[in-house]
Amino acid sequence: MDDLMWLIADQPDPAAIESFERRYPELRSELLKRINMVHEMKGAKGMEVPVPAFQPTIAAGSLRRRVWPVVLASSALACLALASFWVTDRLLHGGDLPGVNTAKRPAVGKFEPEKESTTVKLPAEAEVIPAPPTVEKPANVEFSKPENSRITVKLKDVPLSMAISVIASESGLHIELAPGFPDTSVTIDFSGQPAIQVLEAMGVEYGFTPLSQEAGSVLLVPAKDPNRTAPSAPGVTETGSH
Amino acid sequence: MVISIHQTTEQRFQDEDLYLVERFVAGQSTAFQVIYEKYFDKVHSIARGVLGDHEDASDATQEVFTAVYRNLKSFDRRSKFSTWLFRVAVNRSIQFARSVKQKRRQVELTEAADVATLDRIPAIENQQVATCMRALNEEDRAILVLYYWHELSLQEIGPIMGCNPNAAKTRLFRARERFKAQFEKEDR
Image 1 (spheres, rainbow over the protein chains, first blue to last red):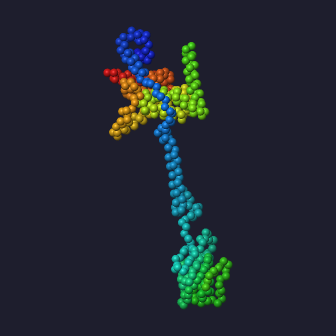
Image 2: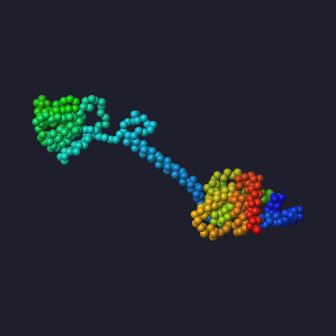
Image 3: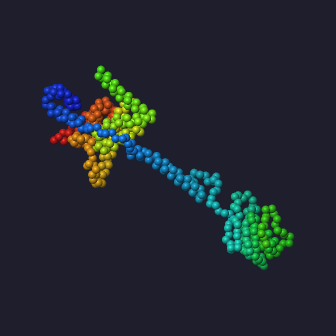
């Protein structure tokens, strides 16, 4: 019955209304209510509105959809940058990386100049030029002795005792001076020479003889060995001895 | 004979829509302008019925056509273009109504009196109908608008509302009953 009343209300044909009222007089008011309601409803559609120009809008949802990939990409880049910073930092500061076999990794540590290239602060007249750092030394026992460690020393008008102590500190030699050692003013300029050869050359020039004692120890005696001459081994250059 | 003429006219309109869609997809943007002008009023009236506010309806209509502009290439041509368009219009209008409702609730919570809402132009001039529509949910309003304002059949309303014609009939019946209850309440 409801369907029938709605059908008549939707398409209010006078003949259909009359027929319905005749058959169901008790439902007449109900039918009229529905007809009135449908009429009001259809009439509420209103007038046509003028068509404005088409202005594409950006919905918040679509904006969010556009922003997300950018945010994700930025986050990924930031993570990558942090990871590379962390790895580089660990490598530079000698830390172990998880999952990396450090035994096979070449030792990349903080650069520390080798002993013979240490810069020594001297009085204004003295100048020490550090030797260029040697990358790799062959496994030779002779080189490991302090007497054979190559030093670069350039001193001008300094006491001989000071020059000797500089050579000792540069080479790691324990140098002893015999009594009566002359403490004259010296000027020396050696570059990359074995310590013992430097001492021998200085001995010829300044009147003393270096005598090797136990390993790493040299005694300087104030006497010239008449058989000794200035070292003339290949690679030994004395640029400024007096 | 009348039926055949009617079908021919429908067919012609259907073909015209498809022709415009094809032209737009092929890169002729003026075809979209024709579609926009042709369907603006229908889409606007759906939005007006669902939203009950003139300004919101205008905003929602622009959103609908923006969505259509962006997604027209994905129109699969299995249904009529107008069915697809009205479905977009109904869904967007319902979404818009829900977001507006949420925003207004937030405004009420912050006790900021929205004076502008008092001056808004009502979308439905008949006050009684407007009040009754406001008491219904968005889906009920949409189906009543499609049936009474656009005079679409249940076969046409079904795909627009995302259901079959029988389900559309049931939904229409319930929406109409709820509207009637409100209408009678207003009448007293």
